[in-house]
Amino acid sequence: MRKNSLSIIMLLSALPLFTLPSQAADKVVPKQATTVAAKQESGKVDINTATLAELTNLKGIGDKKAQAIVDYREKQGKFTSVDQLVDVNGIGPATLEANRDMIIVK
Image (cartoon, rainbow, N blue to C red; front, top):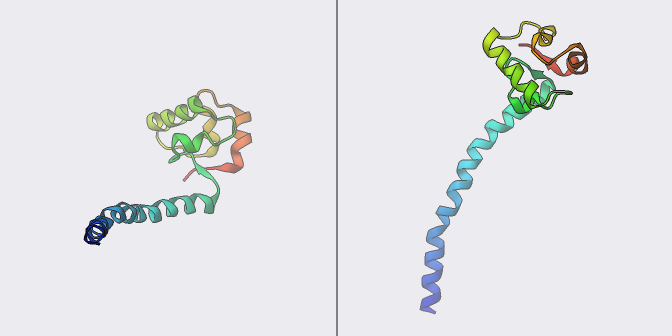
């Protein structure tokens, strides 16, 4: 019986070690949820702030074109209109029109 009591005490003393990571994760989740909720709310991608992953969700935009968009805005500054997207190397009028309703410029 004494051996079992010692095992239980050791197990119970280790419980805080198992709960701390989940508590830390709980603090991160609301921030992520807010970001996702804001994107879902508008339903559009801001080409001035979008990440590579967000840009590749657009029609006809793969890794190379997404990188070209990021490179363009870093070199030229923020986009001032959605139409300016055709100034990015590799993006033409057809790609712009396919995505026009999904992108914004803030």
